[in-house]
Image (cartoon, rainbow, N blue to C red; front, side):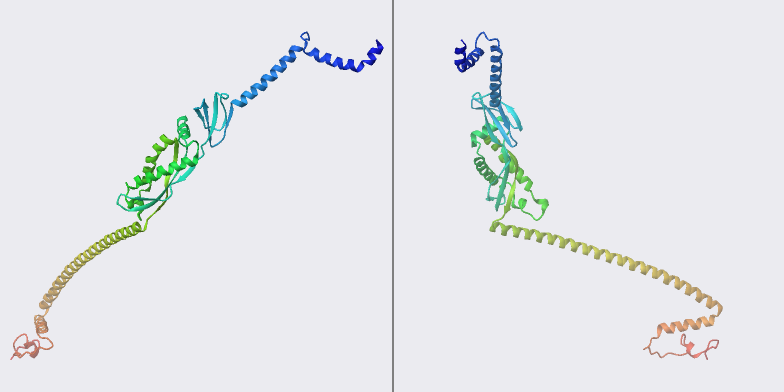
Length: 335
C-alpha cells in the first residue's frame, strides 16, 4: 500500500484534482446551488446591460432622433440627452440633422408693378420641423438630404420673388425717402407665400426670410434716376414757390406797416403843427394887445415874406399896405 501510494502520488494528486472538480457539479454537493445562482445572476446582469444598451439612444444638440416602429416614424426626440426605445427590430432610430441652415436664391430678374425690371436676391434660414408629421414629410420629400432641401427651397423662393415683386412699385423698394420704402412689407409678403407650402410639402420650418441684394439693370437705373430727378425738381419748385409766397407776404406786411407808421407820423405832425399854430396865434393875440402898431408891422412883414420871392419884381405904390411899411416908420402916418 505504501509503495502503491508513493508510486501513484502524482497520479493520485491529479486524480484528486479531477475528483474535486467533479464534486462541484455533483448533485449531492451542498455548494452547487449557490454557485449556480451566482452564475445565473451574472448572466442576467449581462443580459440586462445588453438590453439597456440596445434600448438607449443619445440625442445630441442640433439633432432630432426619429423613433420608428416597423419603419413608420412614431415619435421625434429633440431635447438633448438620453432617451429610451424598445429594442430592435421592434423599434429603431434615425438621426436627423436639425441645425439651422441658410440658402440663397441667387440674383433674379423680376418685374415690378409699374413695369420696370429689378434684380433681387433673397435668402432663407430654415431647419427641419420638430413634429413627427414634419419629420415624416421631410424624410419623404428630401430623404434627409440638406442639399436637396436647399435646391427645392431656391426654386420656391425664386418663384415667390416674381409674384411678390409684381405687387410693389419700384419706388417702394428703391427711394431716397426712407419713409416711402416698403422693404419690410415685401419680405413679409415673400415669407407668407412660401412658409405654408414649404411646411406642408417638405416639413421645413422657416426661421427667417429676407432680401440679400437689390440692384437695378441699366434701363431701370436710367428710369429711376430720371424719376428721382423729377421728384427733386418738383420738391425744388414747391420750395421756391413757398419762398416766393413768404417773401411777398413779408413785403406786403412791411408796406402795410410802413404806411401805418407814415400815417401815424403825419397825424402826429398835424397835431404838433396845430398845437404850434394855436400857440402862435395866442402869442400874436398877446402881442396885438400889447402894441397894435408893432403887431400890424410884423404882420405886414410876414405878408411880404410870403408874397415876394427872390426873383419877384413888383411895382406898387409905397403908400399902399402892406408896402407902406417900407416907407413909413412905425407911429408915422403916410403923407
